[in-house]
Image 1 (cartoon, helix red, strand yellow):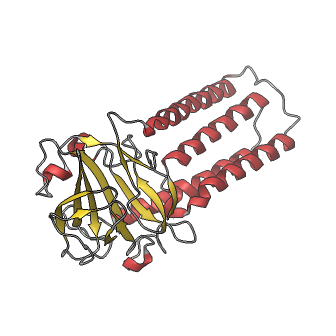
Image 2: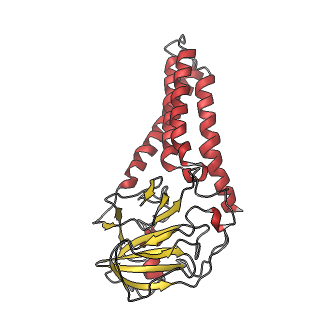
Image 3: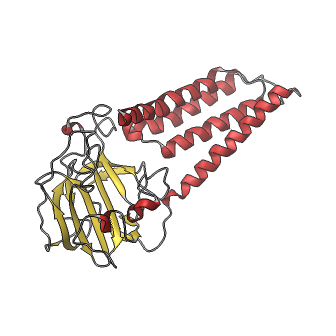
Length: 318
């Protein structure tokens, strides 16, 4: 119930709130041009914040760009409709307080947007990997170096600081048909090929855990079905794989781009997606999939085709 409520809240925040903003901008007359420009900047900063932080795969990634166009139209319409408004506010207490509050909120949202721009920063030398999913349209649901954009980025799970959760996108630009469907086939990513992101030795495999019905989870086996590949000084975990689809064994040598499994919904996950993160192999017991690879170890940032992916990145895998 909590998960469903969280998704419903995303819909309100990404659809209802922007709609209210543009209606407010287009049809509610400001007392003067200074107040109008301040209101316009506040709405622009708020929409920019949602543009960066929102899970747009829930409502459709096209909505992310649609609101930009709608904002421009609302601004132009209001500018034309109220072109005769006075420039300066009255020297009364209420309009001055209102303007001060608006300016304060502009600063708050602009600062949040500026901070989230650093979501693409990382520390240390990154691992240059190949994208781990075969032909599909993909989307990063969690990724980056800001906790607000990547729920893995916190001290309790240090090894996962640069982890990615990757989902698929259907023709509507959403991750699934429905809000939180129980059918695994309703999720665009389910059953897609997982390929080796680097050449190396397989050090750990699990293949027999069941794929769960969303939003059920298996907390006893956090990674679910998985493959760990040691690629030189880096170990890469690919987790939540589909039952009985892992085609490699511990000790096997794999080549970059080699098909190794399919995306599933096993382990501690509420819906199908591929989890991937990398750690330094130094002082890590790679024969165990428990805490050494899940929660401990030095996190290594990952580049895919030279890009550090963050939430809302998307593209087509070849």
